[in-house]
Image 1: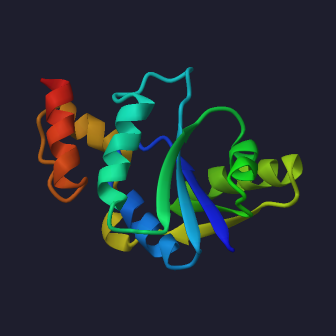
Image 2 (image 1 turned 45 degrees about the vertical axis):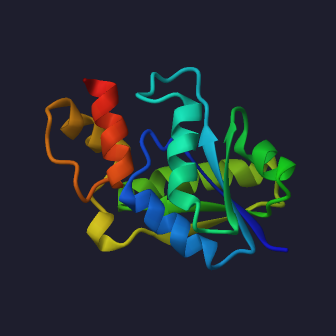
Length: 158
């Protein structure tokens, strides 16, 4: 069985993230979306809120699940029987950072391969940080994140 993990903060999940999830789910028997619970950051949503938003979006993808993790990604991958780490890329800047992370993960555990997927060009400008910034100034979120996520963002801000 080919199992992959797709890790991230997903604060909040964007349409770009969903693009990667849907496409990666067709390549692997099982895809686990790993929500990083990083205590050194101050996210808009708790890790459990982020997991809940993702669960809502993946409910129609039978081979995709979501879990929260902290610590090393390679440990999370090992606990889930995964052999591949999926990373979504929007820009060359993303590649430079993710390439370093892939090399670090490979040095920590040589059993893991990282697969880079380019997001669809129509989502290449979307990041969770930008979504939060637009929301902060009451800008239009339509097309950036799923409708259910827009509601949660507005509830959180107001």
